[in-house]
Length: 202
Image (cartoon, rainbow, N blue to C red):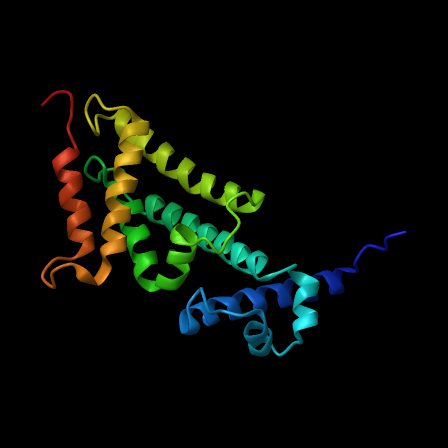
């Protein structure tokens, strides 16, 4: 018979799990994804390797959970950026706000960003990861749909605009510091938006 955790035990497990993910983020920042080890993560938290395995079955599970956490952070930051766009802002600025949030997240969390979107070290079939990625796509598509209904992108479908926006913004985020020093990612996104913000009455 399984005895359910007490509230205090569940909170303690949640804290340890959060500490492990924080240690994993620090470890991939310093050692890189390929060299990040469970033992090093456990040392950062101050627990044994065996204790860590109580929370995560293996290294891939830790890194996958870290990627899930990254996507959830990205969705929250993107949604907050959209909410801050005022109703009198130019056409497409909600979509641009997501793009800018995406690029800033990549700049500030480069190892995590690479893990989320370019690493074979995570399990792409993990249900939580699939759901987190879908949440990001759904936010982008919903925003593109709202903007498209007002004329953003002209006759292109919301799905097409969402895909194009993601491809271009991901390219900017990936290039990162290879951009010329007199060009800012924010300016690129806003310039792009001005180029594609087309009203039917133009």
